[in-house]
Length: 157
Image (tube, helix red, strand yellow):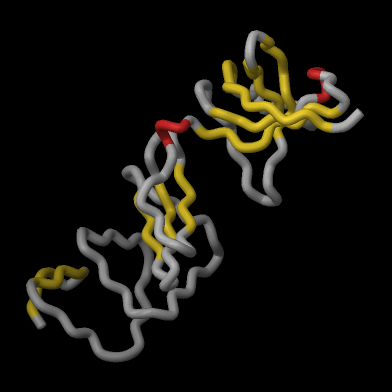
């Protein structure tokens, strides 16, 4: 019989339990559950009010599959060709990758990286305070301005 396509609005987000993520959607006057298709490795929980495209095999709403899941008011504007943005539409955090290879991460108060080792092969510029718990191993020159405080007390360069 084929596959019918239709737009729907998410009425209720997924409980995110079980083998398949499902959301309650409304298309025209029908309210029903649809299974969410997630792009390899990228997972989201569509919020109420999000728009999704439904694929309905054989016109059977019990087989509906939802693709997408973003409210039009949350669309990311101003992207240039080649730009990629990952955005948490509930809190506003973003990771933006522009076409020139620059990455901008905009977070809330805390960013936690759990790794046994982190390598940064670049010049690092930090605007703000830095607090380190643990030892610092340093190779090379230390160019400093201002007062440095360590276990020997405050001193200047």
